[in-house]
Figure 1 (cartoon, rainbow, N blue to C red):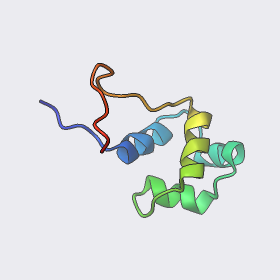
Figure 2 (figure 1 turned 90 degrees about the horizontal axis):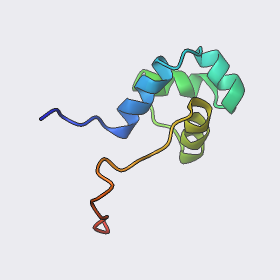
Figure 3 (figure 1 turned 120 degrees about the horizontal axis):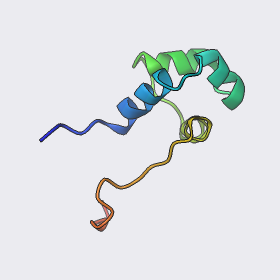
Length: 74
């Protein structure tokens, strides 16, 4: 069974494979270029507001791995 990637790693990969430069993403989202660069290079995290903007820019959304499973309140 393959190890599942953390959400932050998936988001980093999405930025790298977006077909947009980090500068374009910065211009579209307003996320500071330095913060975006540090995030992609695993030197820092992003605020929830920045994650929301980044996901909107890249056309991403969060989905359950198995929608049939119910949340257990964790």
